[in-house]
Structures are given as structure tokens and as C-alpha cells.
Amino acid sequence: MPTAIHRYVEAARRGDNPRVIRRMGSGWAVLGAHRYFPGYSLLLPDPVVPHLNAMEESARALFLAEMALLGDAVLRVTGAVRINYEMLGNLEPALHAHVFPRRDDEPEHLRAKPPWFSPIDDPQYAFDPARDADTIRRIGEALDALRR
Image 1: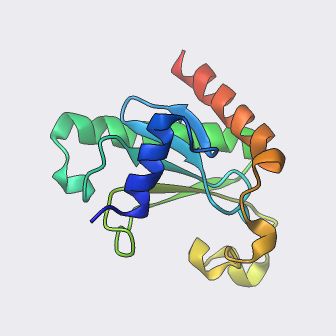
Image 2: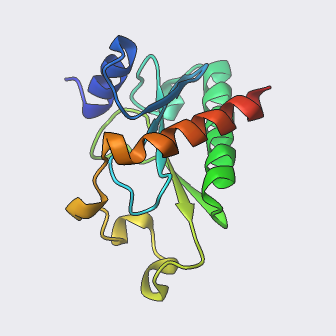
Image 3: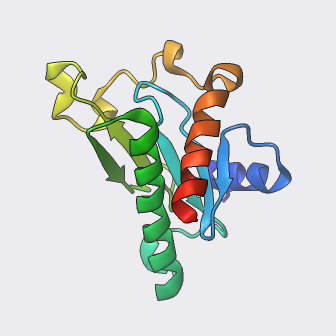
């Protein structure tokens, strides 16, 4: 059964995923569907696999290295103090890595909690292609510079 991750990757392949930042060697860097954490991004493997341990060793190493590279780019663009990386796959049983920029100015009661405790589903934080185009461009340019 295809997951949302499968659909996002298929749309990226067709050029129909407006959240795509860049094609990576292991998959697709995409901006997250919400922006409570401005610059929140994901790395989606292509081809999609069920979980990290289902990848061959070289593919796994590339995916993890590119996840960290995406984190480096998000740090450069957002000025965050750290990146939280997360791979769960319980809701969408297909590998995908979340890259959450964390800032010191987050509300104190949320600062030490996982990102999912934040109001990420509030409609005001939903992805907007026009508003978020500059963030996609800037993260993409940072990735390009880091890959040189």
C-alpha cells in the first residue's frame, strides 16, 4: 500500500511537488508541510524503502550523510541553535527523515520537548508555496554551496 511518502516522491519525480528543495543522491530534500519551525525539512529516499535497515549499506550511508548535509543547510539559513533529526515511520511506514531547526526563542514550556508537542497542525503554519518559496530557494542554495 503506497504511503504519503510514496506519493510525495512520485510527485517530486514528476515535478509536481511544490515543496521540493533539491534532488539529492539518495532522494529528495523537501520543505515540511508546516512551518512552526521555519525551515523544517525532510529527506525522502528515492526509491522509497520501508525503513533505514532495509537499505543496502552504501545507500544507508549516503542517506544519513545527506540528512546531515540538509541539517547543515537548514542551520545556515535559519540561524537555529541546533537541529533535531527524527526518523519514526510508525504513522507512514516508509523511510523519511525529519530535520527540525530548534531555536532559543521557542516558548520555554516547549523548548525541551519533541517537535510534535508544538502546535504544528495549526493552519497558520501550513505550507504556502508563495510565502515559502524564498525559504526553499535559500535552503537549496545553501545545499549547493555545501556540496561544492
